[in-house]
Image (cartoon, rainbow, N blue to C red; front, side, top):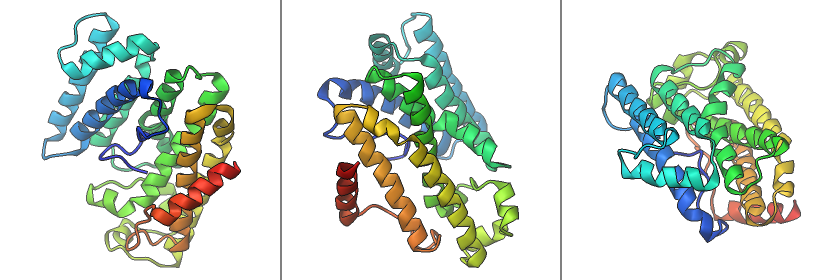
Length: 269
């Protein structure tokens, strides 16, 4: 379900029409490189924020019809103009990347969903615009799917995020299930942890399923792409549940057999 460093972007697979691949690649490059600024290397927080602010300046140039200062944004400017893409979606992504630099804990589920609304949902919105399908109903379901996939990635990567000094599980949930951060650090799997992860996977599953009618409304390749993406998310949740939430020692990943299951389920949809 992931692509290099930026896991919220759909793969430019064989299902993606050739005419849209340059646009998808331009958007993905923007998101990937900005995410790298926020996450990769040994830059200081101040340097990371400054780098992301430079991206905001380049977006300002695009909005005011100025020549971008980097080839990345020259390509992006062309795509934005050709498909009338909403620039605020790119700004939302940068806002989320900046938040990655400054925020490592989330007090409650509402705060986490707010982050998802900027880290994941803009990608779905941009894809809808590429397909000229950005209706209010489609956007609502796309937001549900994108936020759910972001949550699934968090639950899949609890140990990896801890190494980055981040905890995405809401603090109120840790308190409710009597889980300490020391337990995460020690990768201690017990009954309380299993109950917590079942709670989180159930919530993500319900959110994902609530947006899945979009898969049937979107025609052609995009509909099939979305069916596979959502089935992939559901399959990861099943794998997390199968190991009783022990993602510390059994990080769930999709294997060849899973893809056959996903294809079968996509056809059944």
